[in-house]
Image 1 (cartoon, rainbow over the protein chains, first blue to last red):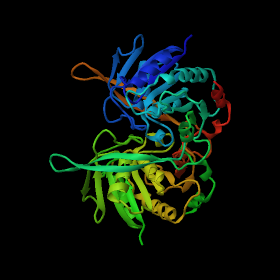
Image 2: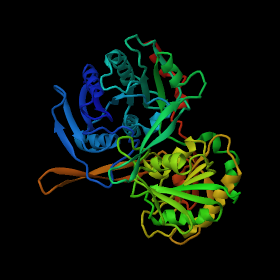
Image 3: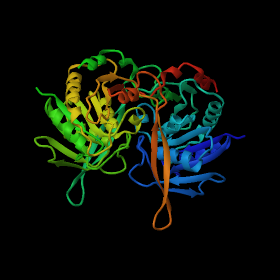
Image 4: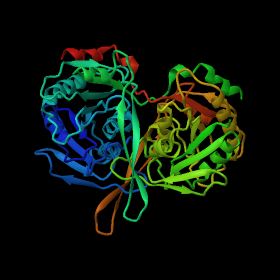
Length: 256
Length: 256
């Protein structure tokens, strides 16, 4: 029996990246798509609890059952599991291909990775794919073969400690990827800038923008792998506990 | 010199929980508030990149410089650092007191904790406080003394491995807290339900709801501490790498 693969993203159901991902998944399984009806970049792990959620069957991908959803990427996975595929076992969830990097700290802002994490929380093997190229005209075709290989491998193998992978492809401008590296999340950051402007009524408003800065010099980070032309694979999870701090000075608090 | 303390939340600047937190922080430092102008629960680490952000000085807390912001909790911290407090050193960021639990997996959906994490990313000591009581009429007064003690301690002590604490108060119905426990994030989950309804035009829509289920039986989880009447303190961080998986079977991928 073909594996059942749920495809979603955060750039919206008509983004070029998800089209490539759907076509690639059709080579290895039965594909169902539930994706946002509008761009949802940087939505983090937002879920919709104060508004109703709409779900509409659409004919976007040839021969593929697909739905657009008014909610966030995490909502899409929840409604896919509970409404669209109710009672069916999802073998793999893939999210993307994101237009832009989700390496390093971008994982915490990323709708793409939140959708993947939402599936992983439910015990579903899950991968977020991103290409480090924000252009809507980015060339996703070099990603097809590695995505097919990685997804096939992940369907056949179960990891002991995680079921969630954050995979980024470097922008290569036509050159081949150097290979795949298993990496840790680089400890980089955004240096924000707020652009101040004034609306026609004389009220100030701000645009959030910024530049990405990486000062993490460790050998095995995702940013380093990407800079060297490798595909980065970061095994990830949703346990945000800082275990190193459980047994130290922090225990002073218990005697306050 | 008094420490500079940034206060924010996700329930909005007029929520009762933030009022208590502001009053408590006024006992130990100079307080500046930048908080959402509307409820932002479950917004995760969403940031606003496709819309302009509004910031307006308001007179909500007596004797305290305060701003309401149209953005998400993470946006509030970014604009506080870059616009409101530009060039000033923030000694502590506190977020909350949240109306409802942010223990266990709730941390990933939580606007309260995302605001705290956003500050921690910038090297600022940061604490999210939450009371396990969703009621807007919840009694926050028992939290005042422990928050004052914990914040004072954290200002005086620097932890080696983290600067981010996720602190939850149990609902005690008037009884005293049993004490403070240092905990790990319980591996619990939400079991979702979608309530289907029909709008006046005959179109279906869904409400996301669910019940929380904890099957994590380990001794030192936040859920267990809270159930026993203790305040839970989880040292947290933003590195989502699953380090145990870096050197195992996953490396098969590098030879695909």
